[in-house]
Image (cartoon, rainbow, N blue to C red):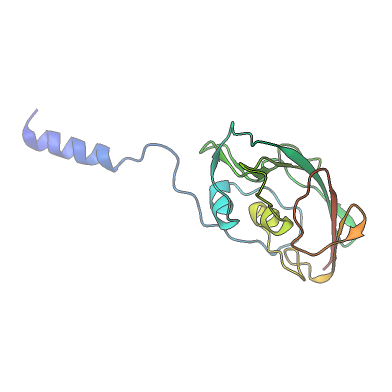
Length: 166
């Protein structure tokens, strides 16, 4: 091969991407349910303020939280894979494995206190003191049947309910 052929070949090869494509930007959805888990979870992990952890990471003291969401009186399924990016083999300390509303919290330290607001950001949903996605009437949060603030912490073994009207 000539030097020119080698130069062209190496330039073309260098331009080919190896590994997954860069993640799409995290955009918080405002539409009606159902809501799938975001495809590019790492963008949402970053947006929620979590560290990217390897998929096999398990924190010092993992625990679960149960979440039930209703919009207009109808249950909304919490999807598997929230906070998990299988393509890049990374996850957030807060994530779901199944569709039963169980949220896993596997923080690096016991001083970390993730919140419901961070979880909804991982899910890719607009969430604030008034709205969940596009539903913005009568947002009510309870933890173990007691009223709670919208950005309540995810406490070990708690049962959180979120209800809202559109």
